[in-house]
Length: 427
Ligand code: HAM
Image (tube, rainbow, N blue to C red):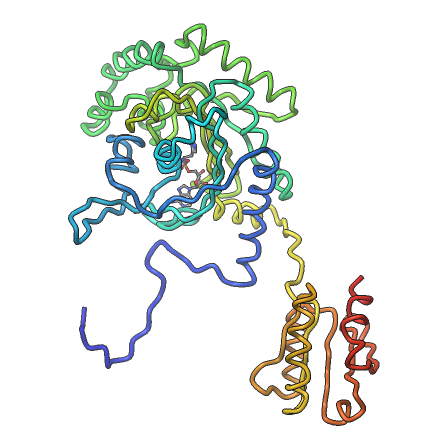
């Protein structure tokens, strides 16, 4: 890299990232709101945590052997010697924050929290897979109740539907708990050790055998046909819990597909695990995912705090909307556009725009001394319903021209009558 700051050069967004710009950015905001609104209404409070945490929070929480921790974390050492990582996911951070603030001790469980923000994974970029991406998530901490799992799944399913998505599929599994998982793990390991697998996969059998079930390669998948499946190894409690979640989803009219191989890429899951997938997205089909993580709190130094949550990928939801040809209703940001023709008009219209804004009217102004043609073009582009046009002659008469941009009609209005007239027109 050159230190020569005098040579002009250009910059682009780093590999695997992209900029969110108008008008597309409005769809992102609409997606975030479609997910967040129902969460707020269901009692979830907003939480915001730092963009980075101590590396160990994620290596302990998400799991030492996961791809996220071994390959995908952006880590850094600060000048003070702290080992930090840009957050690759939100659950460990949110639980850390709740424990730190003792939210779980305030006698009001579950602690229900939602969040929205940027996450970072050093992945191989491709369509739908970025190094910087956006999630909206929800976590319900401190209660073991199948209705809570169902609540979260229903809220997510309804959010996709409210956006107009028709092809999101819910895939469901249970991963058992501390009681039944070890037995299953051992049975699976025994089966896997008998297969013809490469060195790396053999290592995985010893560290994280469940992940082998998730292997996408045909050569591996073909051999997994007779593998022991977790649903056959669940203990009675886990079985009953899962049956309850399934019944509640069915009752709520939320369809799902059972997938005994669904294991997810994070190690903290117990019992309920799920993913929302969309077939129109190619390889990166997951538009959201989550599950129960009853042991995570203890893994990061907290008390037993059974919890459940999910995170939905905003970038991929936007891609899914495009794939289904759904356009979200994004109302025009501007209602009124002021077009001053000359200095005197600028002095009269600028305060009027301020007054309209203070009265709650979305108003914009043609800056930069534009000519009438270019200013009217901007007015049309803004999506405004009304243009307020004034020249010297109008001002001499104490009026401006109010133009209804949808009908093209135009008429003079007394300056002091403009706010009333505008409000009348906008209804
Ligand atoms: P996750 O499945 O790793 O779960 O991520 C959730 C969603 O984030 C994915 O379904 C996907 O839509 C989106 N996503 C993940 N990585 C990328 C990427 N590289 N580019 C674009 N989108 C991506 C979690 O993060 C868990 N914390 C979810 C959770 C919350 N479990 C319990 N509570």
